[in-house]
Length: 280
Length: 316
Image (cartoon, rainbow over all chains, first blue to last red; front, side):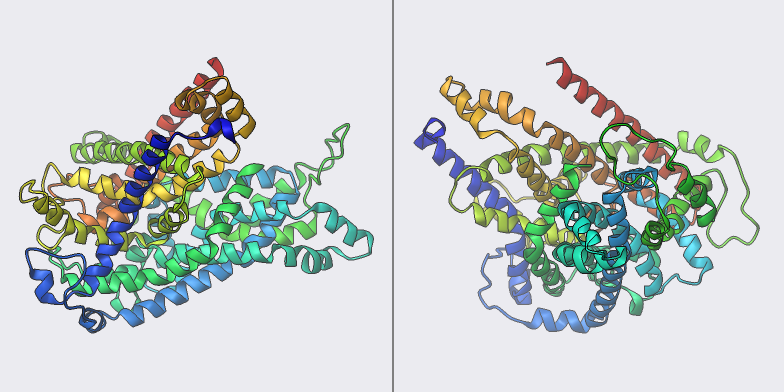
């Protein structure tokens, strides 16, 4: 330890730098919250303040009056929940095979995970749009869910492969020696050990779907079908002249679920990213 | 289609290539394994690989939205048109500026933060907690939030500038000169946490003993960083900058909400351009050709970058 002790001035510099980072990271969000609680008079003032002088909840009420926020939140919830559940249910067995078998299919799947990150969404969304249109799934939540599932798969596979590798193979072999069949081994030995990783992956898939904008913008046409991020952009209006108070209030509300879930799983996500990265 | 393309594969690796020496994990897939793989493999083939190939093939057609006559093959006509489309190449140039302008500072700032967080500082838990915000937030909300910050009258940026007596501030997002830098700052803010976390993970691989030994030998902080820390995090740094560059180049929602490509196309990223071409003007074939050009150019650039970097590492 002694050799690496930082000088006092060095320490001070580090704290100063850390302070700058804290300010940079936090100030836009604090400003969003501040704006959300300001009455129109203060929003129109030429000298806006950090802390609302006369805080109000009117912006939140007005936000719900102006746009179908609640309905949009329900749509988002359905799409994100369904996509996360389906993605995890189909990705877990495949991730298991990818982690335990070394063959061309596993290699191809890993290759797909990487390549799928590099393609611009336009190249994927135009054909998907045409395919879904033929299936009459444009402007339906089901169509959006299908797209979200496939969109969540690369990351879900990546994380889950890491989690499977962390489960000692010896445990499965021991179960096999004791006479458990393959399915039995998977269900009663591997799955319980994987459960925390599966939950983290599902929650992460939920957040990415909850936050997603581009596919929802293209695929959902009528307001009663649209998800929260798309409805939020309606506050901006055609000329970008926005009613700032309700806009901030709605944006703040839309963020809360993501922030809460992310705070819960943050450690697991970073752990999962690493686990996936270690051996691939 | 899926089964047909999958079936020959299952036999391919087969038991025919026995490896001598240590026992290998199972190389061929038996029926049980196929049952496990298919639920994910079918959607991947039908909704990802298939559309991707379909999308590439669309680039060679005159496909349009809402047309009655059948779509026809037109060879490379879209690409020839694209070569002369100055608006597209302007947009492409802006996309490269944006991607570089975001990725490079993002990396430098994230590296600084990661190095700070790996120190034994008080309040670093606070930085870790705050770093969640940009990461977890919907991109649309990030855009809305920064519009409030940049707002010419009610925004905190101009108010701060006025308080510091630096003038009246300006309308950042609609000024021809300031719009692109302003959105780049937002891009940096939004992507910094992921990069920081990845680099922090890399830093945990740095051998502490080496650090200590170097310090005992009288190496300063900068030399220790160059000779001990950097080699350890280099693979992570390469991977994350390459990924960031791709993600940033393909970014859409942030700029859509902040400026929608304005003013006068100064922030019209290629994705925004292609989106309008496809879903406002209905030119599916032409937009698909744009997508192909984007993939091709970015792949070549990344390949050169990675090869160059890796070589540079070997020569040392």
